[in-house]
Image (tube, rainbow, N blue to C red):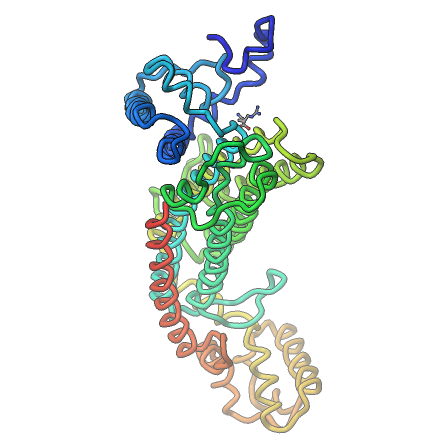
Length: 470
Ligand code: ARG
């Protein structure tokens, strides 16, 4: 197939160059955006009197047919035509002749690919926002079921203080809210219309960029043609969002792996969401969590790759920018799959409430509460800390936990200890007493549930807003 830019060349491109240069294998994913963008462009050209109205009509009809051909799997993608833009344009001209050859008036592939990518990112942001919302909702649902499920909280992976499983899950719920907010930021960057920037310096034709923006539901139009064709911030912002989201899922994955081990035994994954070993018959492995943790690295890689690709580029378009796509596409596929499968895994896992309760009853995670007990009797905290430290050391020597030490023993460390200390040591009381704002106390978590519901409700309007502006 002859090159659409072949005029000044006297030789065919080397075959290796065709293969190396082409992006059609991966950018065919943009066919829908490319066609929609071209329809908007052609309509605007006709409305502004830049091309004859009949040509505008023919172009739109031809593009709609091509859309059907692609969706029916009947379109032949040609590597020699490099990319999705030229594949579609060449087919259009093949179908409708001279009118098709008018489509590219006042346009370059530089602003065309930027337009496609903006539209594509917006579409994916809208879909991912839905999946993220579903995930948040699932977390809140499981958390609500476990407001009374006591477990040890950890720092340094050492037992620290009693908490509830609900409180632990709500921490992730809060992290995901920030992801949702970041996703709204990605939308802001993507919702800017670049078409009309031409190759670099706009066009000599009296185009109407705002009409195109309106037709394609863009909120803003790039104010500088050079920025419009060289900006990839919105892709970098997407990959940053994706990296931080994966970071959160990866931390949760690490906990799921720990919790499902025999050593912890806090949860058991549903048989449908775990895998076995080809050699060891007893094994039940948390592969989903491990894979999500593993895939986090590759999403970081895509962010890093694009940051490095763009950092040394002079304005404006350089072919290096074609490298923005595969990483973005892979990151999108990875987070969508991860969010979907992970949500179902969480909803089906069995939480071993008794095992968690047992764990928190047989440890020293109530020691801070004993120090606080002395503080309430007037002992300075530093001093109380030291006294209770000695009680702990004493208990360890005896092979006991704090509730098993007798009052007379306690009183050797401080005369202020009285029989009521036993109440203070109960893990459910440790949790109930932590009523500070944001703390794990049952009532506090109940407030967080209500707030969470409200946030989910607010996010619904954002989802609708995204949907309405695609
Ligand atoms: N396939 C190219 C890309 O993805 C399209 C833009 C090409 N522009 C150019 N001047 N060669 O970046």
